[in-house]
Image 1 (tube, rainbow, N blue to C red):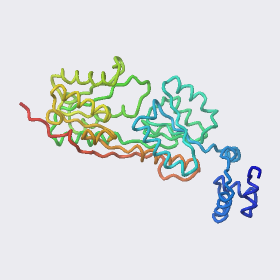
Image 2 (cartoon, rainbow, N blue to C red; image 1 turned 120 degrees about the vertical axis):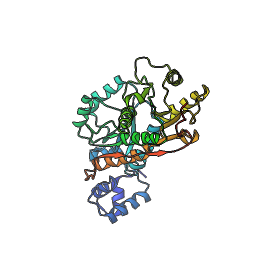
Image 3 (cartoon, rainbow, N blue to C red; image 1 turned 60 degrees about the vertical axis):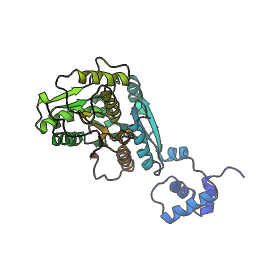
Image 4 (spheres, helix red, strand yellow; image 1 turned 90 degrees about the vertical axis):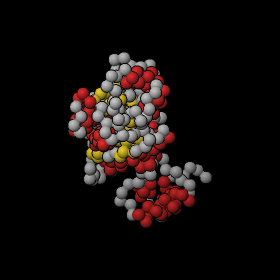
Length: 346
């Protein structure tokens, strides 16, 4: 028997070739009962419809690009892949993860982007783009979605974390526990990209001011790119050394990520600073390491955020009406064993 064609399925289902083509490509204007009969016929004949052929006919590639800076094996990025897959796969879309490891590679990708016909939508994941690239995205005919983006600018839709509300919750907790001297720890990074997590120090300072902390009560540790540590371990050591030498050492710290917070706690305890008796530490993410380390932290859900971004992409690709193009997602405080009332003075 020769290779099966659409015509064979049409004869089996008792419909025209064009009706089979529309039904198997998922296009509208096919009666649901007819579509079911065609799908049953295709299954009985073990007919596989070519996605490439469908793309040529429909003008769609059935691919959505997730654009990452750095690896996809990080906690946030792997969760984003999972969430996007859960929504896009049932809709018939393949996910294309695209990694730009450095600025030069990202620049090359954006130079070629206007002529790119290999994807139906782009989801930009968790890092900032300059004004020129955002303007380029705005001129594309395909939908662009910001996932954990620093702002809504330049995107057809976006799903962002409410960093301001998250930091306000943390500062209010520390205020209620009697802490008068606060610190925020940025995770030092030599990476060229500006990630959304770097917004948190600004939100922390603004939240502390809202809660009546003065500038003399606040300190930010570990940021900057001038003298980057050679490794993650060196970064932890550098922050702890600064804390130990601080004559007005904070009694509470908010830390940019859970990973850095857990490593920081281990090093602080090594040098005799008890957590939480001497110093409260709050992380951010509620990643897999947080419950194991009994870490008080701010919970976010990147899987659900990616689901929301993928749903936005599907609606845009289908030209459907959207209730909200730009979604701000909340967080929640998770109280565990690294937070306690401020130590008594004296």
